[in-house]
Length: 602
Image (cartoon, rainbow, N blue to C red; front, side, top):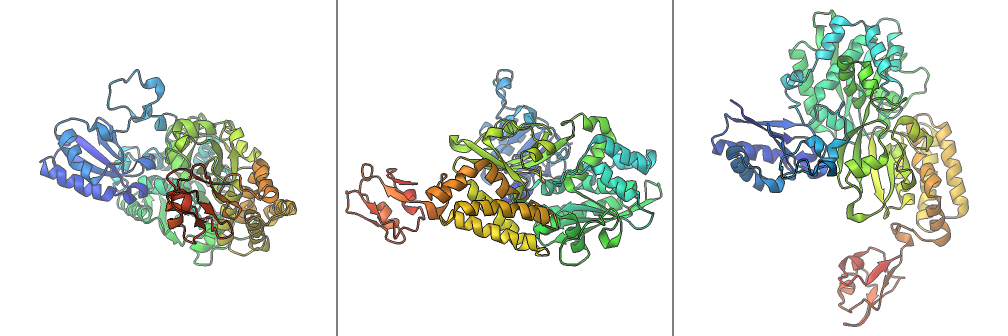
């Protein structure tokens, strides 16, 4: 009889940290202790705290071990699983201050009491880190496919669409279009061949929300797409997932095969007369294929380029047939909305942005990982309560939302409630959910250039505003960061950004100027400093840096001179050294090697 379960994260993050080795090592040590009949090892999806991986949780007590290494496994098995003594040095128990007195002296605390999880509310991520994603029985045990059964036996297609409409669910892929309305447009088309498409391309730098759902709970997407097929009159679906997600692809294939074996995909599902089948299509990593019409063009076997709209996909989409397209996170909410009701979902969030939102929290933040919070949660709560604040005591400067398509929220607006309309009002956008935190050492001009470099590379080239305009913007930014810019360049940059935004064919070009416009709006003084003072306030742009040696601090150890790759530093032993700025390539090696803090840059 199984008395304990060892849950080991099998998401991409923890896998890259060695969780696969942990699984085999746990199996060996458990067998060595004669516990194979009592202890079950379960591979799960992402727990969320990616910065603490590999993560291991032991149930039924719920002990959360973090940063577990292969050498720790024997100790956990012998001490915890055999003798019942928790290995305290590996336990994660960063609890909320208000709970410390209540749980004083307790080693094991509920995950919900930790700072990272306390403010979260998991809907899309409800099964990630909880079930084995490769076992359909575990999904069914968590009410999996119950929503599909309810839909096919108790509800009409119109009932399903009304439920989704009443829930207030909006597309989580970035645009925020009401999901129920999108479904209703496809449903209103004449009967015949229709399609459901899941956008699992997720091309934003730093974004891994959809990947984590597919890795940790693939059946929820299979179930939701089948429900969408019933509601819209579609009999076939495609999941477009990037080939760089091998774990997600593998688990999707397993989920589809298992669903077919159980009669949950294919012909006459639940004896309802409804037929639905699913296919997987791999993307080659083109960012533009995140745009729905380019994605469909790619599924058809053509170069991924957007199509003019109208006609919209609901009228003429995949293979010229009516098509409903949503992203992974949007679909992940559907089964719970059907089971728990539209009112339950609508009770979370704000007036116009219902439910929760998943964010991939990264950048200059202590708790890097995946979080799901109710709409309306402030940026301050996300960064300091959940994210654990900025490393090394640095000041928060800005947060980039929406990746290359989004904008930035400055420190002055840290109490902004995160929802679709609030972000739009300050020139940002929700995007798919990447949230990159930046501290005082970040140059906002350089950040704008970074994202524009990305969109220039990813432009499909079909329309000239995007193809040519973004390249001209990039050139102006390079001119500014190299110290060659003028005030007129800033005006040109802003004018060009506005034109590209208004005239590009698809969402890529229309949103490409957003990082530039946002940084110009909130950090124009940094642009002016680069142009007028020829200085980078954050000390990032190499062309504008000057390295100096403080003669009062320099001990003449010669370490800087010996490590300088171009011989720009001179001086005698035990005497202050100097840097020849005409030779200096501003690599920073001297500063890294100085043990006396005698070298500074400005």
